[in-house]
Image 1 (cartoon, rainbow, N blue to C red):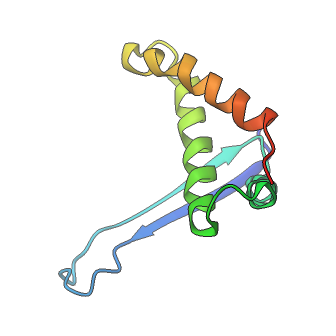
Image 2: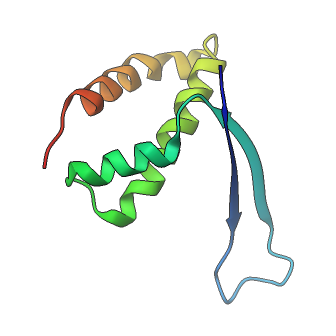
Length: 95
């Protein structure tokens, strides 16, 4: 079902960081075209442009983690609130 493949890279841009600063890089799959979602969020007009990529990517990563770890009690408590937020985000369209 998941047909889109992505890579996330996180690097420190802090000039004062030691030369051995760690970096994080991981790949993930998703059933959604995240670039399409980014475009849709831009069209809404109710988020600052710099907030859109972290919002969209964060929601997709969190949603997948929630689905994958359904039995985890800590995440289970978040699931209904996350689902309600996603329903509201998808049905509303400011702008």
